[in-house]
Amino acid sequence: MPPPAKPSLIASHDFAKPILPRHSTNGSKRSRASSVHSPSVRLSIIEEDAASHPPMPPRAHHRPFHRRWNLGDPPRSSFESPPPKYSVWDTMGPKGSYNLSTHLSTIRTDCTSNPALWSCYPSNQTYSTSPSKSLADLTWIITSSPSSPSTFTISSTANPFSIGSFASTPLTKLDAGTPEERYHFSTESEKITFPTIGESCYFNGTVIEGDLYTKKPKTYPATTTAGEEEGTKSSDNDKAFQPWPFAVDIRQKIAGGSNTPQCFRMQGNRQGDRVTEGITSRLESEMCSCEYRNFGS
Image: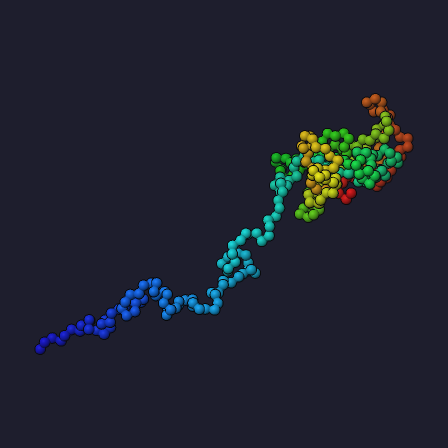
């Protein structure tokens, strides 16, 4: 008896059919161009004749800024608003040489029984009396020590006709970060007046105090069309002292008392006898003062 015949794989129904490529029809291979442009072919992902465009990614205007890039908002500057303005003072402070152009605002003479004994630089005339003659230029220098660069002091320059002489007076910053931010100082100095020829009066312990603002605008003196301040003259020496760019309020004052003032007759260049006629003491609550400003004129 002959052995049973082995099954033929070729005769199998599944393998009798030729396997055609996916893009073929009737066993013929079609080109890519013909398959794409055939009207019977439709894209499987995006319909050709769809009425609307593909959906846009979501916008995220109200999302936190750090989550917007991956939610559809395009990249942009990291500042929501313009960056803050900085000045050289933010790194160096007010250090420098300055010319403070002010006007004599008010005069008080209550500390003495004879008002003529007290006078104010430069001409004893206030702004309301004479705007031009009340102009007072104060040239002061602000420095800091190398060991403490954030601590500042202020000194006057050598000017015997100015409001007084002082050196290395500490500056204190007040109301930081507000529109009233300012550097304040207070010191004592000797004030000398010359009420008549051959007579001098000494107001010992006269207080000089001031506020140098860092934001408050100044209104005096007015600027010319060339950008310079009226009443000032440009020179090489003036260029060393830059105008203080903001408001200043300077006060020179002294209280009444038994030795306010002490007046003497002059004998040549020497101090002679004390003058007491017509001078009586006033209370310590009564003040003499000179006030200088560059605003509110």
